[in-house]
Image 1 (cartoon, one colour):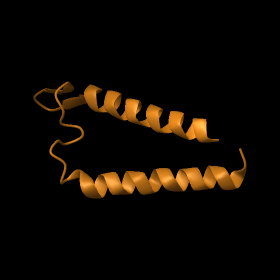
Image 2: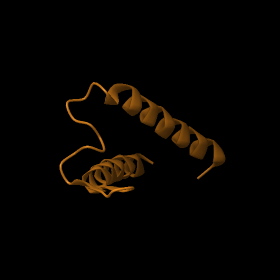
Image 3: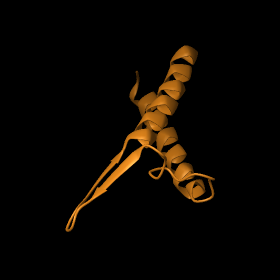
Image 4: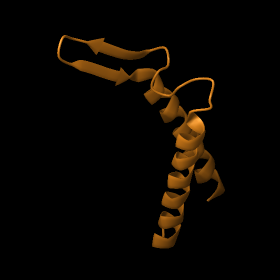
Length: 72
């Protein structure tokens, strides 16, 4: 893969992430607060594990990269 194509791909990913952050507040669900995202709170600490969010983003990114791989 040429450097130009890599930079263009990285730019598209950053733009998509920016749009997701900007539009994310208007979605009917909140990433990071989905059912299956675990939060354990102690007296002086908290542990947060966004399992469902990670699976959702992984599936979405896998689909995007699979579609991009078919075109190139």
